[in-house]
Length: 276
Image (cartoon, rainbow, N blue to C red; front, side, top):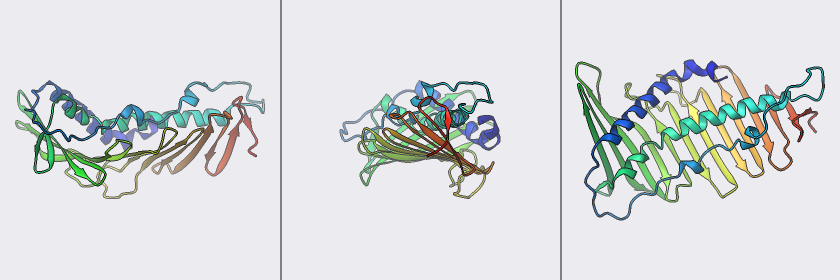
C-alpha cells in the first residue's frame, strides 16, 4: 500500500532526507556559547507521542480456507492499514522533533525574549547554517527552524524557514509544519499535531499536501484517537479516492473496518463475523 503513495510522497522524502543530513552535520559542529538564562523551553518526549497499534502487532493475521465463513478477512485488512498508518505517522511525526535535538547539545543564546540556537558547518564547496528559535507563546512556545545552504556554483538557500511549530509548556500538545526547502513556499508539505489529554486518551493527526500546490486540503491524512480501551484510525488517500475507518477494543479484542461505506467486523478470535 505504501508503494502506491510513492509518487505523492517523493518530494516529502527528499525534504526529510535533506533535513536528516543537515542535522547530522550540525551535530558535528561546535556548541554555541551558553548563557545563564534559566527559564528554558520544555521539550516534548516523542516516545510518548506515537500511535499505539500493539493490539495488531501482537496478533498476526491468520490464513485459513477461503471457503470457510470464519475467516480473518476483516482483521487482515484492518491490520494492514493500521500498521502502515502507524509506520507513516510515527516516522514522519518524529521528523519535526529532530530540531529539538539542537537544544539538547547546549544552552541557547537568549535575547529580546527569544532563545536562539545557531549551528554552522563548512565542507568543501558547501556552507550550511541552521538557526532554531523559540519564543514564549500562549501556554507554551513557538518554534521556527531556518536553513541556509551556500553551494559554490550551485543552488543555494538563504535563511529559509523549513519548520515551524508550537509545544505546550508540559509538552502534552503541539504541532509542527514542514515547508519545502528549495521552493520558498508558505504552504506546508507536512503537518503533524498531537494532544495527550491524560494517560489513556490521546489524539494525533498527520497530513501530506500536494507538491507545489497552495491548497490546504491534504492529499493524504491519518487521524488517530485513543481512549483506552477504544482506538480509532481514520485513513484518507484523496489521490486514490478512498477512506477507511478502523476501530478496535483492547478489552473485548474485537473491532471493525469500514471500507467504501461497508463495515466488516471481527470477533476476539479474529474471525470475520456479522456486525451487530
